[in-house]
Image (cartoon, rainbow, N blue to C red; front, side):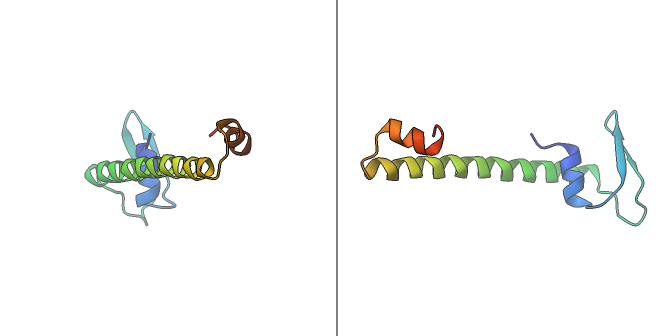
Length: 85
């Protein structure tokens, strides 16, 4: 799950801040503090990116298993090679 902190790190790399009870205390006057709207949008973007990466990883895994099966490997052999795909 993507957090507010993940979004702030993405939007304002190197910024110093704390979050207490959902209140952001900003300590980096040289870095513009992102608005709540910007943070919310970045959380959504990062979450979508993460989910897409997970879906791609599962598709890649299924493709690899399919190719190994096409080469004649058994399920047991595929598991032995892959550590339990």
